[in-house]
Image (cartoon, rainbow, N blue to C red; front, side, top):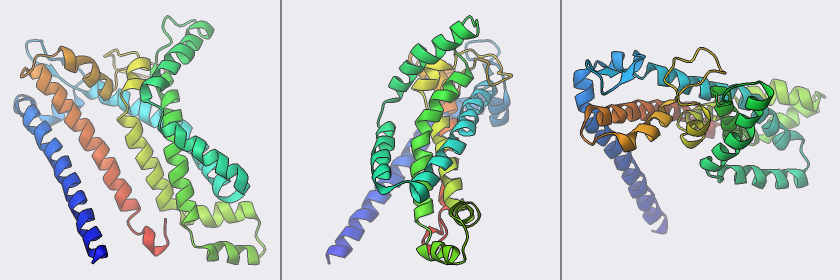
Length: 288
């Protein structure tokens, strides 16, 4: 009886969460509907001119999407090798006492507010680039990526370590019985078996980096110029919404255009999480 009640409660909670997500999506679609009526979705996503007060209307978020990709993919480029190596070390090589110390420290990193990361980046990284590289302003997409790297590392490490630990111990026992070395076992046996979990960690971290607001708002430079390199200034989508929503008139096309940009970002991050679910759906069968 108790098990049935717990199952019912879990079902209700899951149903409420799903309804909440659908409600948010529906609300954003309704708020942004006039924009989709005035501008085609393709022109909105691929357009590079953003001036919602101009005549004719200019609503294109292609520049902001490109800035978002520069920061998010750049963060993954730095974080994935570090995160996977750290996860392998914790799961396979670290002494138990050391792993017991490192895991809580990594978990604490996820609880630090993003504005603190952004503040530290603005006072340390921006100043460093200004002084050492003679830049008029040290803000850049690269600075934002560096801070995002620190922010997504705990997600990559914890998820990847869980994927490695979920592999049945029989694989380790058989491999060691055949006389293979521990590095060979890790690289040639365990990593291929854990590939779904590792890919899931990367996808989860990409969605986290793409949706981050405060850190990129403080470090990316916030210029609507099409970024041509990792070291250019830019304005990712979350920064655009955070900067302009408070100054836009409620009900105007500017206001509704920001909701449309938020809807694109939400669908993008939601798609990343759906990919994560697909990669990890057969975890119970012993494939991480």
